[in-house]
Image 1 (tube, rainbow, N blue to C red):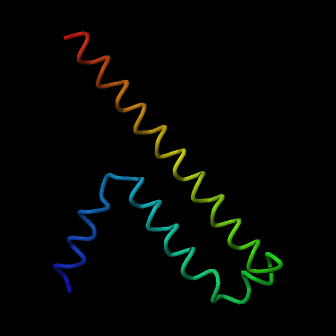
Image 2: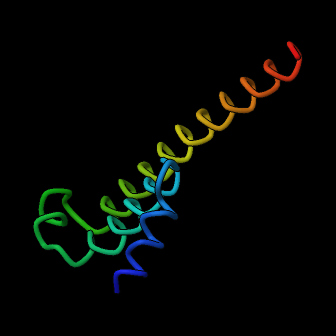
Length: 80
């Protein structure tokens, strides 16, 4: 069990996109089974829409971070 937790920790360490994807997966798995979420949202279609919106938002922020890293690496390579 410790080895598995260590591997998971290493897998997610330093990679915010993986962490966000894992949070989204947990949200999408749990949301339909938690009555309070469905009551708050109104119905399951709204819950699905919210999960989709969060997926798009997390994907966009992850892509922006990766684009920034690529631009930084390209600028660093040009100065050398």
